[in-house]
Length: 109
Image (cartoon, rainbow, N blue to C red; front, side, top):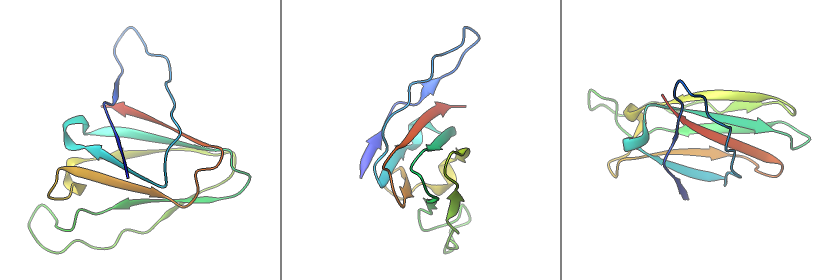
C-alpha cells in the first residue's frame, strides 16, 4: 500500500495536472477528503478499480461489498472519495487490477 497525500487543491488561478503512477493498492488520508481520484488507463486492455469499504457504514453496521468498476483502455474515469469509506486507521483504500501504463491524479474538492 502506498499513502497518497496531499491531494492537489484546485483554486481560481487554475492548477497544472500532476499525475502519478499508482500502485495496485493506494491509500488516502481522511484529512485530504472529500476528493476526486482520476484514473487514466492506457494499458491496452480494461482494468478494474475497486474502492475498499472501511468495514462499517456511518450507522455502524457491516458494510456491503463494493463492485469493481471496469475502466476501458483509453478511458479516463473520475471517482469521488469520501470519508465514509475510511477504515478505523483513517485511511481509504483503492485497488487497481493493473497499473502498467496507468496514471492517476488526486484532487481535493
